[in-house]
Amino acid sequence: MSKIVGRIYMSLVFFLLYAPLLVMVFFSFNESKSTSVFTGFSLKWYMELFSSSDTVNALRNTLILAICSAVLATLIGTVAAIGVYQLRSKWIRQSILLVNDIPMMNPDIVTGVSLMLLFVFIGRLMGLANYLSFFTLLIAHTTFNIPYVFLNVMPKLVQTDPFLQEAAQDLGSTPIRAFFNVVLPSVYPGILSGFLMAFTLSLDDFVISYYTTGNDFQTLPLKIFTMTKKTVKPDMYALSSVIFAAVLILLLIINFGSIKNSKEQIKNSKEQKGDK
Image 1 (cartoon, rainbow, N blue to C red):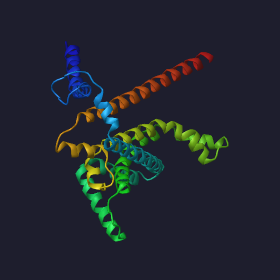
Image 2 (cartoon, rainbow, N blue to C red):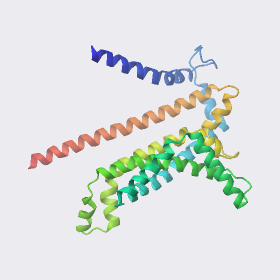
Image 3 (cartoon, one colour):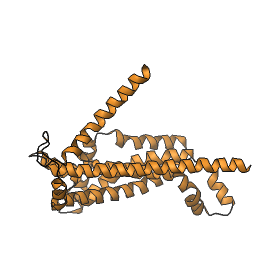
Image 4 (cartoon, helix red, strand yellow):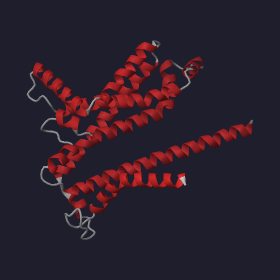
């Protein structure tokens, strides 16, 4: 009885989570602009989506910003995690971990307003005409993404055998070569998950972007926000459906790849036991 109740509860939770997405995808194929009456199947909103220069530019800006900020945050967060992991003082390490958690606990509006004030202050000191631009937005996205990358890489470093790098150096490898050949492959899953999380957070962010972007650079969340003052056109449903499908395909590829690697590792371990 408890199993049946548990399955019903989980089914209800998943239904509430995915029903809005399914409704959005369904009405993205609607012939009319109605969000309550399906008048017929049509691809005209997808065609209008890719023919709209404003929407395509906003999507391009969003992807450029997300990729650049995710790459920078991954590099900085990974190096920071390695540096903190190699610290011998536990007090300093715990203090840095505590400081790393603060940006994630802060509300987005606090982070956005504080970064805006900082950029305006520095811009006035430097005598800049435009205080906010793409670069301030990139710095802001990189800043709030670093803690998430840090938290994804740090557990993988803790799980790594600390003597692997020393063993590689005993066998003739230089410290840099031992790091790239031994340590980096072991923490690669954490780096990849940190990159994907940073990319997703940057792709989805609105509040911080609203306070730190200039007039010459508009992301997709900002464009959708400006549309809500009047009405959201159905081509936004089509664009959201495309993004949802792309993310779903990416997750399926990653999950199937991890399952395949796990099966290969189990197979190799069985073969090694059989040889013994």
